[in-house]
Image 1 (cartoon, rainbow, N blue to C red):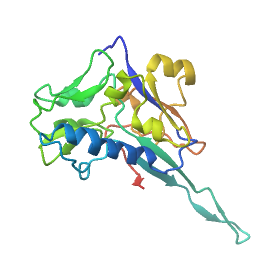
Image 2: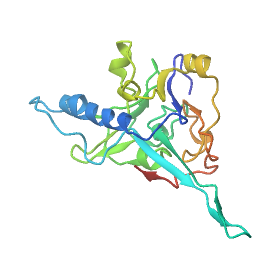
Image 3: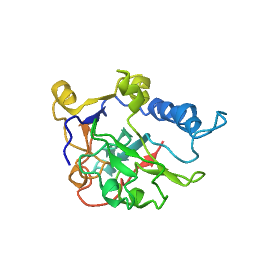
Length: 225
């Protein structure tokens, strides 16, 4: 699938401190805008329980070894990764959707959900290796990061990008991101292999970054913080 314009994210994992400001601001948007739009009475509704479109994970590993002199040495590491929808060029969630509710917008390449077509079967969620589509169990429809499209139309950045105190996130057309950051360092754990969906995501790797998973499947070996 090709787009004349394709938006995507840049993540600098050398800057991410795991503060979760991006995570919290995204949840606030769910409450202030997304949920209110589905409420005809206009009353404020809480953010979707258990639904986190952008998540911050800690990935760690390493070991301690005892030397011949009885001293211990270690190569223990940990780093953070902010993960949302990558608005992939070959989105498996779109391919898995039986009704066409999950679709890729031609004007900007963002992957959206047409709620009126969604039957809540969760096929898209099972297919996505990034856990981007998540079910609203109250309304029985799928939800996901929509790239803050209404903010983009106003020339603004998504809330997750604007809320990051260390400017570890950026969002723009992929052409602009590559001009600014290059092609990045490749994907690192806990991300799956980019070959699965061709995600529109550029990563600057933490110095302790470990290889991304080479096989099919979900994000693995991580702890949410």
